[in-house]
Length: 281
Image (cartoon, rainbow, N blue to C red; front, side):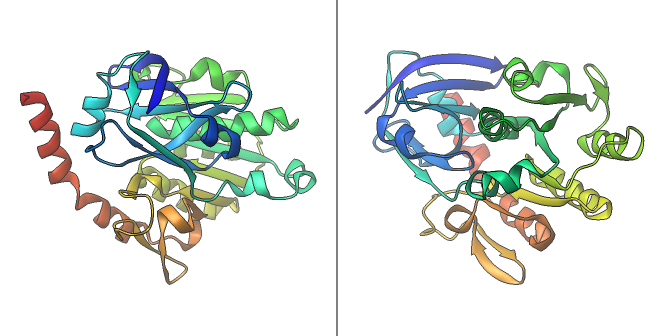
């Protein structure tokens, strides 16, 4: 059992939990994820780690209520317990494992969409703690669903853009990045993009044109998180990879996004049915 130490709603359907998880906190690094179960017979939910504190022995997860299991989890409050938290799983970000002196030479931009802001924050914070300040673009449909703004401002140079122009810049993350490079004289040689699959696809096309090496996180497609179910099979560089055990981050130019999006869409009916069942219950 893993105790929920703190819980906070970040917007109408996204909440943050700080969990007492000593073993995970001791070993995890930015880019990795955990598998969470609300109850002993509950669904396995892969969640990328948003933050961790080795001294306090805690990890932070951010969850969006998009299915029945996450809706059920959202009813938990501080002082209650989650049945399982397994991890850390997956590979850490290359920025964390590469030689730190080489990383310091890079001009880095992060691009986050929606829930992708959480794992991006973990990486940006790690870089900040090692004396590296990166630029960060956070995209959202409207102002009301922007998350972790203050936290991100504390560790990086933040640019917020909203589709409807209700906050920050107007437009999608691709427009913001292109403006930074072509109109404002910014130079980048490394990009990390985490967010909805369609956003990562078009952002990768742009960075390829701009000559920016880009890594994308394929965590949206994960189901079981151990490589056993095969649900997160993707084609990377012409080879079959599993997002959970080979990733979750991959070179964007090698990912077959169209195949990945087709696979992701396979589970939408089940998600909708599970969500309806929980609501009716």
